[in-house]
Length: 96
Image (cartoon, rainbow, N blue to C red):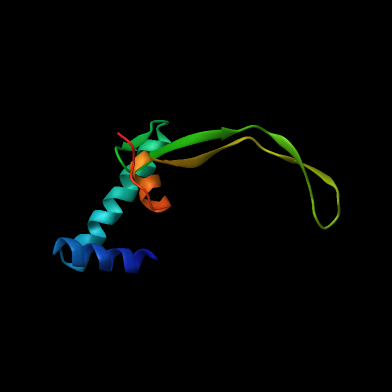
């Protein structure tokens, strides 16, 4: 599913116009990104948690030349699915 298909699904489910659904989705993604940039997490109970993880600097290898290269430390976004969400994907029910 891409962004346009997601907006179409939101439109069908909520009765919003495509413009309203697009604006709502854009607002959601902007809020998540800005919160993660601040170093905070976004938790949606029953769905999951968006957070930022730090990767340490490390040595890597250039696959073409085999030369060792240094990979800088960086922050990466992370998502951990909630129990209910994971259970729905697995086909079962979440235990309470």
